[in-house]
Amino acid sequence: MLNYPINERPREKAIKNGINSLSNQELLALVLRTGNKQMSVLELSQHLLNEIGGFNQLKTIDYYQLIKINGIKSAKAIEILASVEIAKRLSSFKETRQYIKEPMDGYCVVKDQLLFEKQEKVILLCMNHRLELIKEKLLFIGSDQASLLTGKEVFKEALLCGASQIMLIHNHPSGHPEPSIQDQQMTKHLMNMAKKLEIEMVDHLIIGDHCFYSFASDRIYHLN
Image 1 (spheres, rainbow, N blue to C red):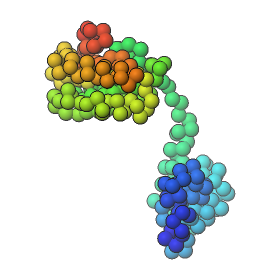
Image 2 (cartoon, rainbow, N blue to C red):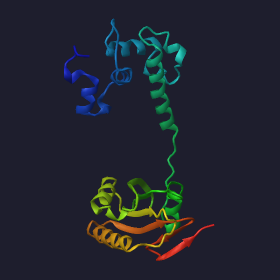
Image 3 (cartoon, rainbow, N blue to C red):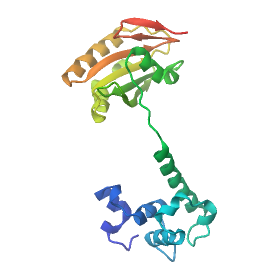
Image 4 (cartoon, rainbow, N blue to C red):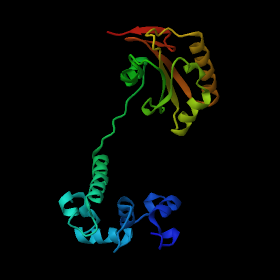
């Protein structure tokens, strides 16, 4: 690829103009990464497409067909098949939105991550105006210093994904969900920041041992 002008190299072209600006040949060249002594990676990419009968045939190609093509050995064949498989899974993936309408909904999203966790973790749930969960972000992992979490860290993530509502959730490794003075101060501070940014902080949950505290409800939920 060093013989090609910079603006004609697939990687540089993608960085400058976006990945969707690349041709099928160029996209495949990025997957192949290198050519061989006889062909550049772009030439190898086009050779492969010619051999299999066009870009559309990648969806049905198999390992043994690929390694029969001159210039395609085992490693490149697997890389091509992995890329094709990713595309197939993405096309068949049906996204189901989760709704965070009450404290229990938030607890159900994070319970497997935080229940019995020995370190303190803080997770941010970001929702749109319909209370659909659009992003889940782990903000902090530590011992007992979640109260040091800054509003900048919280709201940066909310603003990046365009959230109109958020829920903050953290655990107490002790198993006791009662809020500390630091928890109360942090929650008050974050709620004040949320108002200024026109983002609603719907709740702050503290996860304990089969129980959790909700600031919005001001109560502990005990679970079986």
